[in-house]
Length: 395
Image 1: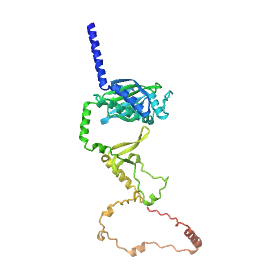
Image 2 (image 1 turned 30 degrees about the vertical axis):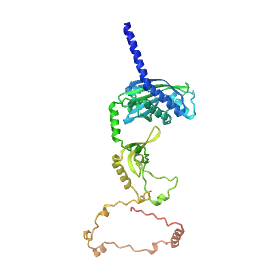
Image 3 (image 1 turned 45 degrees about the vertical axis):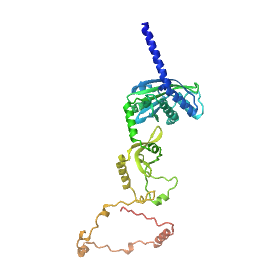
Image 4 (image 1 turned 90 degrees about the vertical axis):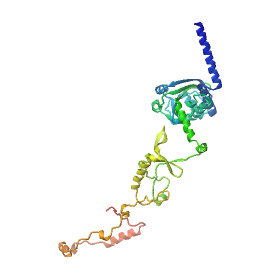
């Protein structure tokens, strides 16, 4: 038995020596993450961050949700091929990052228990992106690098329930880092939770990239593209456009937030969407490519055009709008032979059918003051404007 125990000790020593040799040639994921986080904080803000330990474990979806503690800042991580990860940061670490960016130092004041906002997430975004990029770079020859590279800051999510709805991978690799910040002034925990991806996903991605990349792919990919969001278009006459002043109100359609258009270049429609908000900031939810929503958009524009009034003859850009052609204008003019004949007139019969007028009574007629009537007309003529008159065009 003593010999067996001695053999196991020897095997254990050899295994540990082999592991140390492997870490000497390359970096383990724990070591790579520790160095990436400390280096990123130092380069960004000169902040001293020491990782006291990294715990790595494999979790399923339920296990991921159980590791999220109340009050932690939750950030969605966007990965390649639509993969989604999660970053969780406690209040102590969050407070230290905000303090070093606002007052240039880390204090020992107790972290405030308040609702988290999108501004908090934006404050930690540089550290997240830098750490994730260096983490993958440090694993240059490690077999796990394809699993861990390509992730970046995505968006803040409010609670663990939202996270459970978004995270749909079968398994996740969790990295829990215990941090000592600014020489012990604050201590906290950061968790990086990345999805376990299969080798097929990496192979498909590599094949797709190789097939789509051309000689000038990198050059064209760096060309800046400007996208404009158009809420609606309003037509008015040139006279109305010239009268517009600062503070004037322009009536917009009731569904203006439902009919946004994403336009590129010289008015080319890329996509359509709806106006909303995400984490307190304005956002646009895209409905899909232009071809998908073209029919609905055309129907909406046709409906608004049918309700346009006589003043909608000219657009703001200066182009006159062509009046619609009606069926009456396109049909052939009717000839005289197509009109029905009028009935014959019987003057004697019509004269006999009319009743006699009553006799006039000059004494019963009232006097008419012509001077008053003329005075009213003269007063109206002396005024600056024309005589006010109302007409009912519908009668």
